[in-house]
Image 1: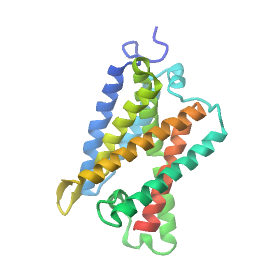
Image 2 (image 1 turned 90 degrees about the vertical axis):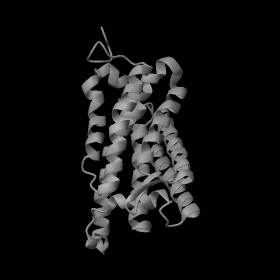
Image 3 (image 1 turned 180 degrees about the vertical axis):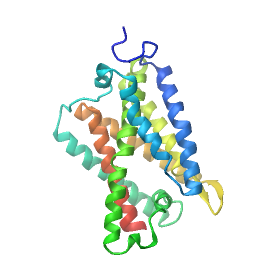
Image 4 (image 1 turned 120 degrees about the vertical axis):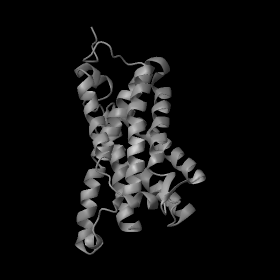
Length: 247
């Protein structure tokens, strides 16, 4: 009897992990590219909701505990994880600003285009704070919870039996970095697509390192919530920089 999955056909192995990477990665990549082209991001949020639901749909309680969905063993590291996420984003912001100033080669400048749904008066006076809070709350929930449950949870644990925790983290971090090329690297500018090769490579490296940091926080807390809070801190800082230093 399968103690981890609701369905006996499933088990934690590299085949299942690779299936999840492709099953979620390809549609998400294409949806984000299309959203960057059209300016409509409504469908991309559905991917994050599916990521969030998948562990509960596929796993029994023991399986969810196995991927780290459990009470943290080190509470203070939840706070440290959140701060580390903010710090990582600060470094990435200043690196992008130093290298590329306010040009489209700056990852956060390009990503700020996805905030185009804000009305013209949305950044005037107190409205800026209101929209910042709205976008920050969204950025600190859907993406961190969904992505961490999938990448640091299901996908990571699928590679652990064959490769061990550290190599499994490298694999899920590479998958995480590649899918984020849709957010920056392959860009839609002036009605056409182009690859910003060197900035894209740097962005992938930064996303890989961020992903490894999320795993580190998961390890230090003994829970997936460490990774989620680190990711949430990163997204909070990114939203702040976009609202108060870019837009």
